[in-house]
Image (cartoon, rainbow, N blue to C red):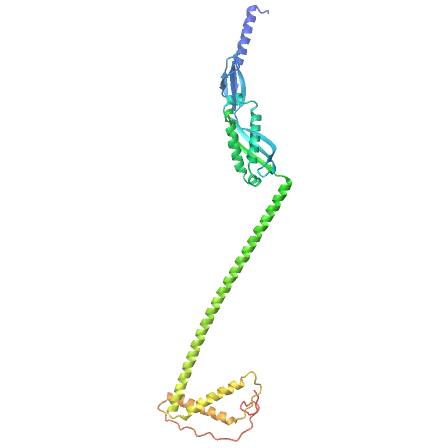
Length: 341
């Protein structure tokens, strides 16, 4: 079947209409913005979705990605304020806020942001000492973010974050820093050890002080008790002496015998208990001591027996003790003149 001229014209017109429709309909994906140019001049920006343009008059100028993007900053050498050479690399995050400005205000957007970030890293890190550089990474990131974001604002770009990934000082500098850290830790250990020794000495001194105080208090209490005991003993001796004096004043001769016998026996006990006396020679008769003991017994009977029973008649005082010839006592008799103690 042959087509006539009219049919050919109709087919051409249909194809032309279809081409015009395809050329005038633009679909923008999510996360992108398209700029439209009319005869080479920017007119508007297409939003995501289905958009219509004037075919053959308007065209898409730039397809801009408005999602947040990551830009790796390569490693570079930085000289710090104290002339230390370090290597540093970073990463930058940015987002296109104005597609028209990002497309027409700067050429090669990523390269521009990269070079701007690198130069600001050198300037910011170069104004700091090495110790400050290694310990204040957050401050470096904040300063870089503020400076770079302010610089890219005319381009319609928002720098959301700039992070220093790694800072590498030279090897010899790292070794020196390790030695310095070791010396500092040894210094702290010595200081802590000295403080511990000082605290131990203080505690020991306080313990000795408390011990001395308690010991002094104990000695004082013992002195008080001893004084009280001596006072009571003196009172008892005074009372006994008073009773003997009263008995002597009443004409009781046995009281004198009691007093003399008591002193006599105490003197013998002192002689016998002396540490340098191994043999005690007694040139007196045993009957004298027995007579003294008899006098003591008589006084005890008069004092304790008769005083407790007032109705009993007084007993006649015993006559003078009659001397008896000495009898050789057995070896165990303590009153023997030749006995050993």
